[in-house]
Length: 222
Image 1: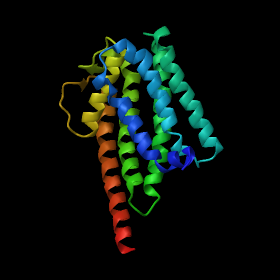
Image 2 (image 1 turned 90 degrees about the horizontal axis):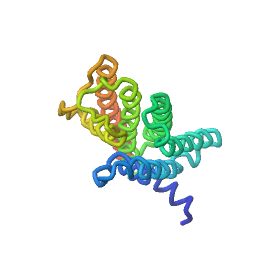
Image 3 (image 1 turned 180 degrees about the vertical axis):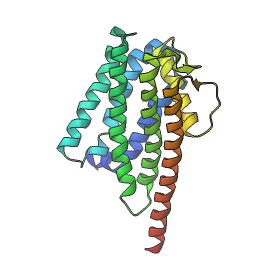
Image 4 (image 1 turned 135 degrees about the horizontal axis):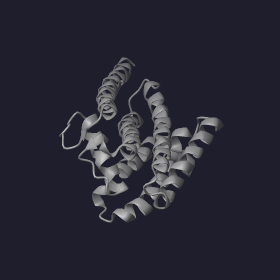
């Protein structure tokens, strides 16, 4: 099996591993400067490479867009030490990340609703969809917190890495409806966006269950 065939066959498993390590690698990191200046750019290179399989057979246009977005999501964190505290730069960074993850999420979701069978690809793609939703909302919230630091209570603004990790935690517990309440939205636009996370999480879960049931019954009938 050549490399292209392997990537195509395991594309969703590869993407899933890349998403999980990007969101939760902070569990194992104590040096925040190293995390921001080294691990974050490396993570984005890994994610860019991990998403290649999703777009292997999607045509030149989609691959060109994905490659351009990957270039920016890798470049911007490298430039972060030079623009630390610059609100305009942080806004640009987070917009690029929201677009990048949304672009991948749409392709993953299209795959989920297509096949009439259940296999490891379907399960892995379903998990990828959940983690991509978390990524999208994390960077959507970061657009707010850097422009309006008072938009959340309980978020640590002392370092970009801590801010990111706090928002990963907040989005994870909100999307899964755990909601501990130690981090709370403090202004109307973050309150509304938080409510949107809850709706999106429930909608995704309901649609996903429907998709999986329909695929399972289709398998049984065959």
